[in-house]
Image (cartoon, rainbow, N blue to C red):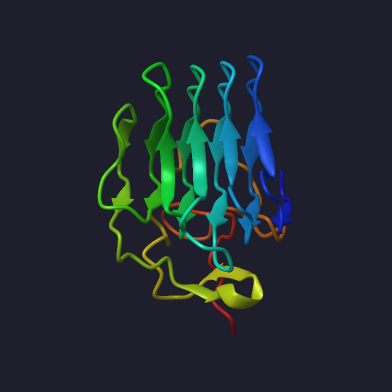
Length: 179
């Protein structure tokens, strides 16, 4: 919780029936984001997974295979060839209140609702090229998350209060107006 992963092939991998809680992480400039397999059922909450810096040809934001069923909430998945990828008919991730840079969810994904989908959507990061994925004031990810998500962290990746408006923000950072 609260980590930054940069420059890895697979920074987070879940397998062998594990059910890890993955929250408040910045996963940026990696070949892939989170890999789930072997009956893994992670709970993925308030993460920013983005791929600036690598080609989109071979990489995935979150991949699911071998009967893995992650629950994904309040998460940004942006900039991969396959932002959310389901490899087999036995994997059924559930995603809600998340930003996915894709025009549709792949087969097998359970849409929990309140997702933002679109291949041209922009999460409006401050300076992604320099690893600053805090949200600009114009970001569509501000005040649209699920306040009732189980185990919602009290703080964001920077240690700021998680809730600063009427609803929690999507991603690892809670927007703060710079004064």
